[in-house]
Amino acid sequence: MLSSFKDFKASGKCIKVFGVDVPDTMPIEKDVWMARMINNLVGDDPVLVLVGNRHTFKNVQWKNDENKKTVLAQKLKSDGVNVASVMQYWEKQDCISKIADFLDTDNQYTGVYVSDIIKPLSIKPPDNVSQITDGIILWNCGTFSAEAKKLEKIEKKTADIKVDPAAAKPKIETDRKKIEKSIKRERPMAGMTKEDVLKTLGEPAKRTGVNSYGYEKWGYECDSEEGFYYECYNLTFENDILVRISDWP
Image 1 (cartoon, rainbow, N blue to C red):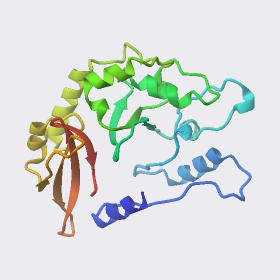
Image 2 (cartoon, rainbow, N blue to C red):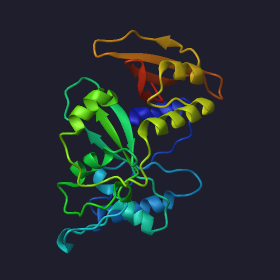
Image 3 (cartoon, one colour):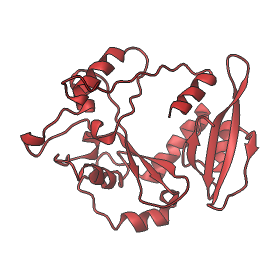
Image 4 (cartoon, rainbow, N blue to C red):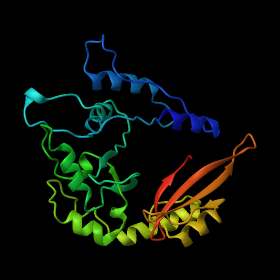
């Protein structure tokens, strides 16, 4: 992670890094302390906070008062901070390198993963997944992006948390609209075809052939304000579909 921040700085991006964890000598709840530190950082620029899933719940109802604790995201919301919360989930799959899929709260499978995350904790499942998070980054071996394999696996599970039918949209139609917007903004997004990516970014500076895991990678170069080139996008394709985007080498 620290190496990634270093690459951000080298590529000309403006970024500041702060530690917000509570010192061992401070007799205070961890999330209360972190909320205090983050409140001091909030201003005109966005603040990205990297914490574990337990600190990201936006709205928590505890099953009993004995286990009740302050939750960072919920505390920040109560302090008037505009909070967008994203969890992470690692599939129990064996592969050398996992890719990331983002599932928003309209996705019918998001509740399955949220249920697994909160199951060990003494909190009540919310009525709707959007009450607790704005989405999940799903780390997997690439099978999630293949619809048939995804359905075969997910249908074996049941979610305690449901997606609001009134808020849900047809997935394929929604993704296509998002892709068209990304093409106009010249920004790649997962789900694009190779043709979509070529319309968005043009020809890549380099391509690799399909590896033994079925992935193909494209690299794009950008020029910084200082006049030097750097690798700004690394794109990973599976079955000619963009499944992973890295903003740094």
